Amino acid sequence: MAEYEKTSHSLTTDNANAIFLSKDDIETQRSNEDLHGKDTPKRIFGLRWWKRRSNRIVPAGLWPRVVYCMIGIVCLSIWLAFMLAISDSGHPLEQSNHLSHIVNTNSDSPERDYILLQGSLINFDMEKRILTISWVGYPSTYYGNGQFGDIYDPDSPKVRDGIEIYRDVSSERYNATYISGADNETHWQWTYQIDNRTAKPIGVIGMHPWDGFDTDIMFTQKEGRGGWRQPLLGYPFDEWHGEVVLVANNVTLSNRFNVNGTGVIEIADIGITDRALNWRIAPEINNTCLGTDPATTIDLGTLDGNTLPPSCHLKIEFEATRPLVVIICAITAVIVNWTCTIFIFIITCETVFMRRGYMLQGMDILSMCFTALFALPTIRSLLPGAPAYGAKIDLIGILPCTLTVALCTVCISIAKLKIRRTTQKEE
Image: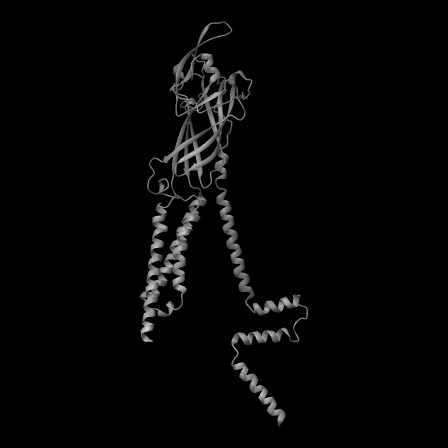
């Protein structure tokens, strides 16, 4: 009888203690009992120990977890592959800008000298709208019958005094005279002369391998392009246009004719290396030395000057646009901003206007609004190559979203204050 009363008292005590235990305490007690039970592996951090731990933490649902992990990996792989593909989209353009060292000639063309220019993109300043390019020249010659040669020799009499490069000038036909050393007689020869004799050269090349010059090209709005094509305002669909005119003068020929600027030679082709970050620079040249027919070449020794083109210069036109990566990033930022704004607006309307008071309990909605109020505008700072605030994308995807979230925050705050006031009155 005493043993029964002892057992009954023990059971009653255990039941009484179980009443005051919370659910977490009961789970903890069961876990301790499992750990110290017969099936508990004696070796800690062993295979059986890790298996029991994993089963306790993740009791079920293995395949659903595998599925959503695989979906995440596939989506991430697709995104990385897509970004890498469009980031290399400018590679063909860069290859097409490389110097080809091919000049339009025919088998009947006479011998002549020309220059090939290789440019490197240094910087593109959006605020100043200036593109800086560093150029290096490669003087060459054409011997006829498809034979080309390199006269880039410091000891060559053709470039002994260097080649002057003039900017934003042209040249005109000029009938020069010179005295031949063979017969000591005066001879006539058609050539080209710089049309602005007061112009100063921007650089001299051809005397050393490291000779070069820089050009700062001003960019403006492309003609006939408005709306979303305006520079800076139409980011990321803006289009820019810039141009420069170059003329090369062989100082050795000028000294031969004893007149400054009368040794103009052809700048046959250019090549652009490197790529500007977040920009797509595409050059297009117009070589007036060839005239209207690309197969026509210059014969400076002709007796009839009317057969020569009226001028000889190289006009380079640059078109700057945003690459596909920048456009996708800008559009994605606008979509993210509006998606978050719409959801916050819907939650605010359901809470305030539909009088769902239980949604105002706690600080969840208010903290979400305040977080979005400061987080959404910072997305703009992640846009590559974004201009200063005030572009059209700000008026469409940034400013209205910020104002909407701010109004939602004010409405949620007022609703919470009203509920608190009503609660205090009831108390």
